[in-house]
Image 1 (cartoon, helix red, strand yellow):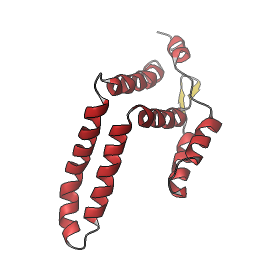
Image 2 (cartoon, helix red, strand yellow):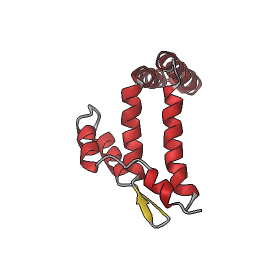
Image 3 (cartoon, one colour):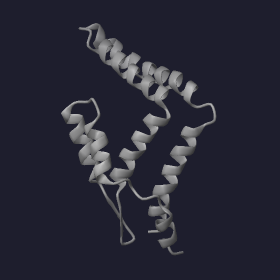
Length: 139
């Protein structure tokens, strides 16, 4: 079975310049921006084709945050609270590892309940899975 039709059907990755502009506009540390910028350069060679996997992943992240703001916010709040609990002297050493998974699960679930009325997240993740499986299965 020839993989060319599948590879041609893949959605092209957004331009690197567009993604770098979006990364530059983020209000995060320079280290986080540098990591995201390095992620843009990751490529996969499949069947003589080059797939811009890093750009696809960063575009997917931006798309998820845009489509599911409550889930993203819930996860961020849970991570911040987990960090604060873990920073408590002595008590944080015990409570941090115990509470972090529960807080993350709660933040994710609380945000997802609002965002996932019609399961668009599942559909979007499935699209990304199909995108990469079409490129790798027929190689």
